[in-house]
Image 1 (tube, one colour):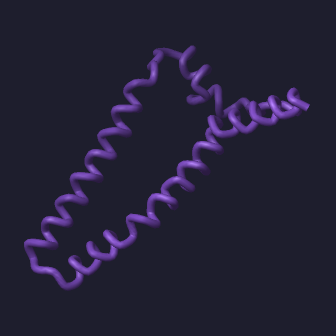
Image 2 (cartoon, rainbow, N blue to C red; image 1 turned 90 degrees about the horizontal axis):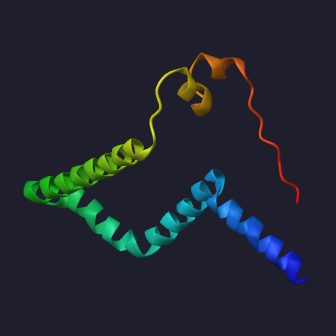
Length: 111
């Protein structure tokens, strides 16, 4: 019984760290964060519709700063990945002309 539970927990943990699992649970967390933040979003919406020009400018400026920081973070993460050179790195990374000819299929573990 404990082995089955241990295996089940290992599979759930592996799913959470898989690309699809990270995609889904990050979206779920964003939705859960959106619920308490929604009154503030309504205030920003009201400012953008009925506020003065200086208030609207401040909201737009803050939004642009946030978008710039997000883009900077994404570019920063891309530079952390090891970069190879030559044909060998293309073959390993799955890019380039060699990957266009090959079909890669990953087997499923049905443990």
